[in-house]
Image (cartoon, rainbow, N blue to C red; front, top):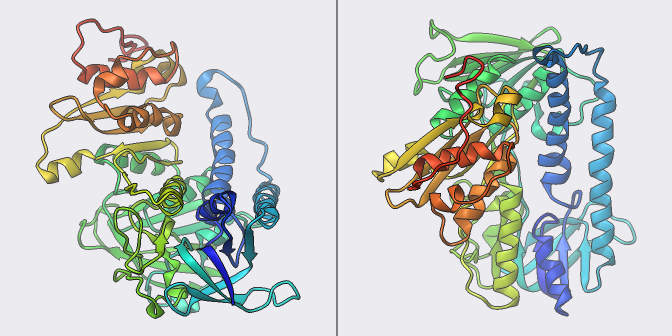
Length: 488
């Protein structure tokens, strides 16, 4: 049995802990059966955003007339798009595998790891070649970072029907003419926008009364309304049964009960037929493949690993990060958690995770980004707060872009502490970081944002304007262009 100072289960963000350990002179191992880099590189955020960029280009061409530009969309080479993206992301995964193999002090095991006890693992290779044999390894420290996979909901008839998950839908050789998406969260919303933009007739079925229901109410309302321009949206519905009719898959969707009959005035069941069915009902942790019952690692009833504030599990010497930990299912959160675990393991620190300023984004049309609390969460907690919402066209660049449904919503406590910010519109995923830095710097007040000098004319002035409304300042230079072009 080979023994290591650190064994990392998962070749995504967790591999940072292994390489950091090797740089300090320790012996480390990484166990990964699939492509290196985690789901984000080959099955998630990078390829999906590459697809969405193409959708944005298509949308810009179709909307060019609004800017007095004569442009026509002659066609979309769908198969060439997906093939090019596939080749790029898998080249990156292959390069990461090569880099890891070349790292002094790191051993790469290409296989599935399963616990024998708290820190001993059996490796079942994915390729039983001369270089990939079954093995048993042990780590003085073990990091569980095996990620997650798409959830397959219990729908009657699903066992007899072919379906796609987000893993499958990214690299289709041909564009489906019709697509039903089950799931109204960010995955369903993003893929719904992409497929609809490139010409597929899309229907989205979501349980809640609005899409992306975990967002601030004002945000999810805009996303739901906007996507209804691209797709047939059935909010307040759930998929009750699936079947086939010839070559078509047929989804029977019924009112979910909790949210009334939103999306269908009669409240009756609807039948949706399409070429393809895409399940986008969330993700689940891969802990069921690890044999955690042989360890002292405790999981909750959904399989997520339970950790303390330092990301240490209930088993001595075992840590966890990424999608197996429920709190923040984002790649950037996993990268942050990897830094925390590396520091706590290698430096014996006591650094606790802090998610208060953890941002996230949704790449629909319009784009969405958020950090901190929503207004609904604060109201439910009985917290005192103030909020200001400023539309994009308050700033000259927002007016120029004609981002009519864009806005920045700033939320602060009575003392000026930033409690949350929600951005809808072009470049939202970049604009939010001004607020993230302010929240993360230790002060985190509205004056920290409003008191900074902002480039003119740029979209960051919308953020400035929203926080200036909340700030206690005697002299404001925040722009307001809502008095031109018929705006008010």
